[in-house]
Image (cartoon, rainbow, N blue to C red; front, side):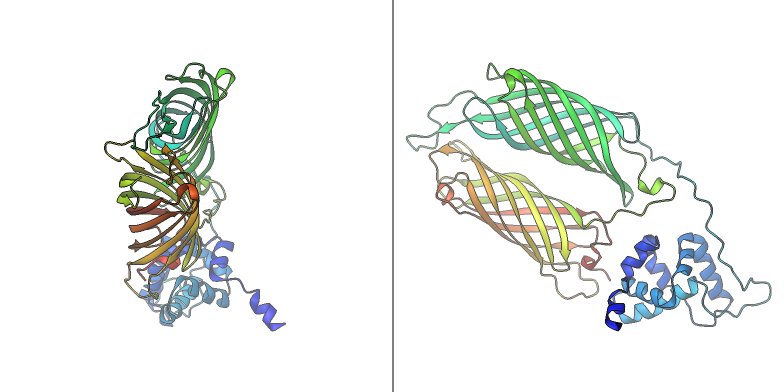
Length: 465
């Protein structure tokens, strides 16, 4: 019976979320700075009153009993001394400390009820019109023989009708290479034909699926529903109407997403699927869930969005050569203080000088292991590693032994992190696993960084305690 009751005791984080006290986490320093030796004298009591007036949310602490306040203090601190002092401060803020005051000073300080909830009418400044551009890489389908890969560049303009709905117009250029065949194995395409170059002009409604505060900016998820015209400049017979969809996440001015465009009628063989990144300004949401009445707590998410730039490297094969700078993107899901799940997509390009280039597009999943030492004050840098597996699609000459197929990727990295941001340098070793890519061996150095969506879920990675 006792064991079951103990197991049911909520954690400090659960209590903060349950009673709408999530903002208290950011006030830990101010709370800990209170001098709370009992009985409180005039100065110490005035400091408690001033802190409550400065942060009215502290008035809600009165809803927690002393045991719950101690559990919350344990969640806010990372050592016994901090927990003890914070527990005393929380009790005083909940008006449970003994007080000895001079005449003329209110010794009651009854906590006034919270004012009637009023919706937040203040709007973040954001113009109704917005513009942006993006670059992407992905796969394409065509009635003509092609290597399956493509790059794209696009420009868009947006108009916001309301907090959730708007309209978008965009135009894109997509270019891919024909199928390359190297019968004499000299590294040059023996049957070169036209590349596949497409232009699209699309427009349609846009819907904001989510809008959340992220520090001093806004994080939003938006879905664009598109329709328009697709023209294949280098290939007759693949022009016509097209439809598509674009799902993207935007953090401040940075935007990343995936876009699908499918041709109709005579263009039904034309398909583009692109992962894109870019910049966008204007026409952003001006309200978030914190502006509602009553305010809804910030959504909790263990997700992080990362970017990676392969700086340089080499393929350990005569069919590859040196590696040019590329691009990668990652989604990271926090599992444990030492472990994260990771999904990665990247593009590696091998120019090969006087021979036809080779490009690899990879999708991988795996884990990231944090090798930072034990939690100790001021430790901001350290080592971590990743182990991933997936598939790669090669834009390469045929026949080849560095082509499509399953791959594994292992890396060791050094960098810094806290509960909001991480960055560092990572050394990757990547290998092919099938007969079609048995000579695909690559060693490269990359620089990466990531934005962590929720400080509460990543606070065990903060090295500045």
